[in-house]
Image (cartoon, rainbow, N blue to C red; front, side, top):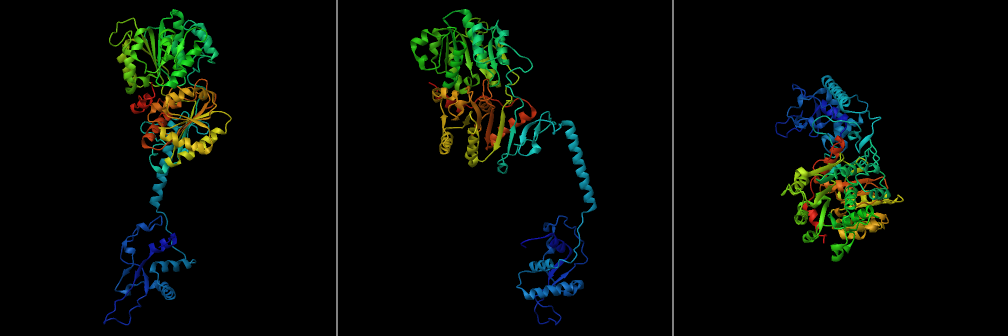
Amino acid sequence: MRWISSRFTTILASYRIYSTVPRTSKNSTTNQLPVSTHKIIRRKNERRKPSDTFGSLSSFGMKLLPLRISHPKQAYDASEEVVGEFEEELNEEEDTGWTSNFLRLQLKESSRELPIITEPVAFHRAQRKKMKKKREAEEEYERLYGVDRSTAKVVIDCAKSEYNHYDGMRYPPGDIQLVSKYWVKSKYKDDWFTIRPVMRRNPSFNLDESFSWDENVSLLDPAIIENTRKLGFRMPTIIQRRTFRAFRSDAHLLIAAETGSGKTVAYAAPLLSTLLRTADSHTKTIVLVPTHALRMQTSLMIRKLAEGTGIKIVGDSERWRNEKLVSEDWNILVSTPSFPSEFFSSFNITHVVLDEADMLLDDSFLSNTTGLLHALKIRHSANDKNAKDGVRLIFSSATYPDKLQRIAESIVDYEYLYCVKTENLHCIMPHIKQTFVRIREMDKLEKLKELIQKGLSFVSGQTLIFCKDWKNIDLVSRSLKEMGVEHIFLSGGRQAERLIGNLQSGTVRVIVATDVASRGLDLPQLRHIINYDFPRQISDYVHRCGRIGRLGSLHKCLMTSFVRRAWEIKHVNTIELAARLGKPLEDVELNDPARIRGIQRNLV
């Protein structure tokens, strides 16, 4: 049958159709019916099967098929008028099958009253009972865990509104239904959800208390405090205030705080104050960073803090390669771990800072970093706990995996390692809008063009596109050229170092980069980050997100992530779960050694 209606289903459920084809034999009688005769009869003496409530033919058994019978006398007389009309129809038209002709005939008889199939009482009662229990369960759930959705603020906005998460909503023990749980299936393409900002200000400031720089006069030199005010820092952040106080101790420091919280000022301001108090030009401080771009940016920030103090900082250019300058005329050297370890043994070095310590102490950087540290005498080291003289180490990082502390404790005595952390460490940035889109690889460029055009519609603000490798950078770059969009791309530390001025000024609106730009870069004009390729690890997501919403950012920031692969969806599940529960991100591990080796090749 090419089409079925509920009317035909009712007819077929009420009757059985039989085709009577008598055999041709010598003993045949004159009472035999014509070969083309079809009769409709009701089967007797058989148990009636339950009807299909929903009008589906799938529940009918094989007994509904046409049967060949040898006793036409069993035909039911009440069906004779239908048989007569049916025989006339067969004579007039070409025989296309008994079912099609019969159904066509019955369709013409619109005036005939058909039997009505009603819903069984027991089934209807069970359905009502089931729906009542469901409503009661939903009401109980809302009473225990829900909120007033008419007034509550949406925290997670989903394409499917039933998955929305509201401020104050809680969840029962057990698995939580995530909107991204089944994104691994291709049918969920174009699905999305957005984590909306719940704060306007950077969480690095204490909203309950207000601190001023004047409270730190006993901890910092007045000239340094004045320079911080000139830079636009109206008050110290939480991590800065805690680090200033911890710096008075003799212990090594491990500073861990969210991205964009001012960790550079947190360790640089007390370091500069210490150098000014000692008034010893022979005292040296080393600041180690993982990339050339970060080396240049860090040295520029420290130089601004030291303006007018006479302290000399090198590391913002190739001048530190000059042997005479390096050996005589500097107080603070900012360098990558590529510096020869023999160089440090000839100076009176009092402090060594490991900025981005989670990367510098990763497997791929560890040999270079520890090689430099072994050339120094470290106070209260793991090998000599009683040594009171020597270098003081300061570890600074935006992530704090367990492995980082274990490595730090293998270098220094854990009793003399003081950890300074904030409550927002590893938390989803509450002042940044973050959108996740389930997308196919073939649709990425089209979606990217849409986002770029929207970003360029604003008067100012930069867009940073993260790609996993040079191949995808080239693909995105060619697409932007076709659009006529001016942009620059960064795939190495040297390139970022040369372009740091243009990046910070905002003259270039679109930037395409690998993860070389995810560490430490401070771009005040940056407004939108697009993860064309989702980061390999949660820690990389934290650092990418940390390029926006920083202290001094000039725009309301957002981040958009394209999600496709199974491992990407697994990371998104982790992020969504943390957002729903209001807890820090889990599985924040050290960096992927293979990716770090790519960055390490850019070091000199």
